[in-house]
Image 1 (cartoon, one colour):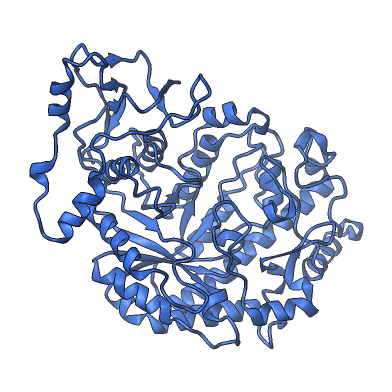
Image 2: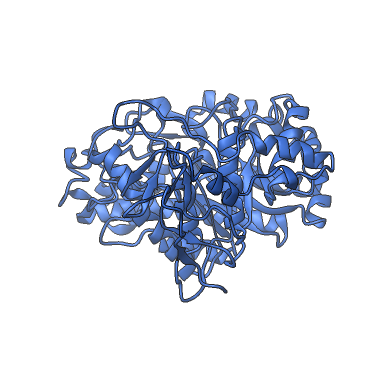
Length: 541
């Protein structure tokens, strides 16, 4: 493998040389105004995409960046700034997928605005995106009657995607959509499940105050026959098996490259510990979600086995969703999280999470017969610089400063030959410190810990951005994590999935940056390495 390097560009004197690497951003300027993000070449992405669809040549219309530099030498205002930027030409190809809109299929199982979607997919294909990710919502497919599945809309969608030569990552979405950051549609759990929940609300995760969370089913009913005679595991398996049979041709033709199995809220393997719909705000520590009767029974049984039946309860000094670690008796430095009881409780709480993933992925391997499966972990980076890592603890990741909480999860995934999909690879610790210094966040440290835990377990690692990303700074951070510099083992991400296809991404400047990012992820050279249009704001590290 070629070793990537830091590229230095020799520029005309009219181009400003910055003395340190620049952090590129569309953040608020020093005078309190938002600066627009401009482009090297105007609205060319959509124009070129349309031309390519018609089979027309577009190369003659392109203005090479060298010509732009030469023609600008006589201008009073230098058009570009120079900064140090790694050259990824010749590095390993990391496939790039793009998540489709959450509501691409409506509640009647029909493709929403198919003509517009087709144009957007063609635009993605024009810049050599490898494929797309599609959520297959349980609440749409098995909406009204148990074991009656309606895949018609997804079949139409998949045929559209295949016709364009794109691959598909599929998410088995056993959760509700709506109420979380980035959710722009509301897709509930199936109606027949919600009817059960009206008479037995303990099928949902529950906090200490007894507030139910209907985003997904509690893991306490994985083996309980409370869903019209079926356990939750059987419900998940039947759904996955139905999908496998209905879309057999897409598996046989290698159009479907991976199945990401939903394991919790937002499809992630975690407890719903920080629900916005219950008042949580960043950077609150969240709350433990184990107070339904099924998980409480499990906790009491574990305490009795341990010989301390009075430990069969949740901690009573964790305060509330928006508390800080140092404002609680449990999570503060030297707090009860590291007591004998605290270690017992957190071991049990995190083990329930790992056991749930273990059981569902076993069912997934049975349903998908050797096809690639994956699980998604959320990047809970706030309070990472504290001893307790409180936000991770309430989400089920037993990862305080004196314990590795991600190694056991990676080992469980390895058991099932499952890939790990991780978020927040675009975030920089310094930016988080500037924007939310009170959060004591460290996304870079968290990403490095999780990636290495997965690589040490020898499982494929994929990733996605946690928040919308349209700028050079965010893309460069993703590239750094995707292809670590001078890694002696040549490790890199198995693929990257961009969140998400929308009209903002397709705006001219944003799409220029995205096309450039795709090229670099694929290991291709770019002509403007180390150059940034002056109209983009720059800020020194």
